[in-house]
Amino acid sequence: MNRIGGLEEYIKLAVYRNAMELPDEVSEEYRLLAQGEYNINYIFTHPVSGKDFLLRVNCGSQMHLENQIEYEYRALRLLQDSGRTPKVYYVDGSLENLDHGVLVMEYLPGSSLDYRKDMRLAAQCLADIHSVPISEGLGLLSPENPLKAILQECEEMVKVYMDSHLGSKETKKKIRKLMDKGWEKLNRTETHKGYQCCINTELNSTNFLINGKDKKNYLIDWEKPLYGDPAQDLGHFLAPTTTFWKTDVILSPQETEEFLEEYIEAVDGRFCTDGLKEKVYAYIPITCLRGVTWCAMAWVEYQQPDKLIFNESTYKKLESYLSYEFLDRISRDYFRQEA
Image (cartoon, rainbow, N blue to C red):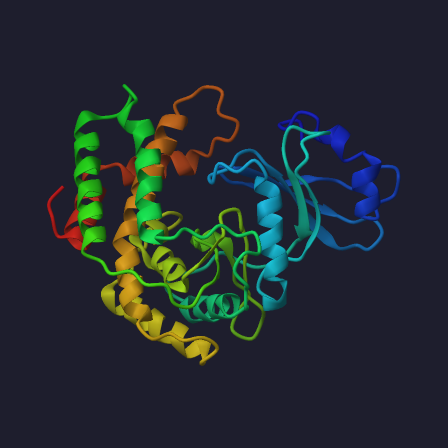
């Protein structure tokens, strides 16, 4: 826990220990479980109940929120009836006793999603989450034009790479050409709001916890939820920039179509899915741009010697996503235009 200055002192505080019903003296052991780009997660066993919990320390916000950890907590509370997300027990975003937000949730079992074996299970999991009724105005952000909002986010992220002397000139040209095609596609796409729910927007394979056909499967990591169209989530889930992130899988058109059929079957009339497929296919290419531009931004950040979280596997993927081969494939398969 030395990586986070003040964390060892924080877990000794009465406000934390009382809220978690922990003994006054620290006897539980906090073990590093995993770290992403914006959070570090520790697991500990409650010395009284024997239950395992996850302590999540927030180190940044993709959404540029001052209350990032509380925003994630709110989304998890809204989704607790889905049975597909972890229960939350404690949140502290005050930054009064620690320079980082803290969240404690239940630790859930499971393995990462296997795109070749678990697609039906993922469809069922997402259908249950998307079917939870959420009233508008419950604290979730909701862009008026989601596709445009994604492209604007892409422009903000890629500016970091474009303005950096470290970036390749040829790569900058290829990404700029892709972005221009994205804006052209937006202008040709009709958007209309239909059914809205709490969407995750970051459906990487490692955010799923799969336990099998006859067991409960979950979706974790809710740091960037929105009140939006389930098609946006599905577009992110199916996009090659998502599937390739922690694996080497890029889904075929047939696999994509089969998943959407399984998802609609799993929804089972709980909300209207008319026109869903068409909207998903509009989101997929724009989502590709989000993945590429995030990688461009992150690549520059990874060059900084004072970066708090550094994942070697992530850095290698960043290089892959910015390769000419990958950018050309995105251009050819999703924009039908040579980069």
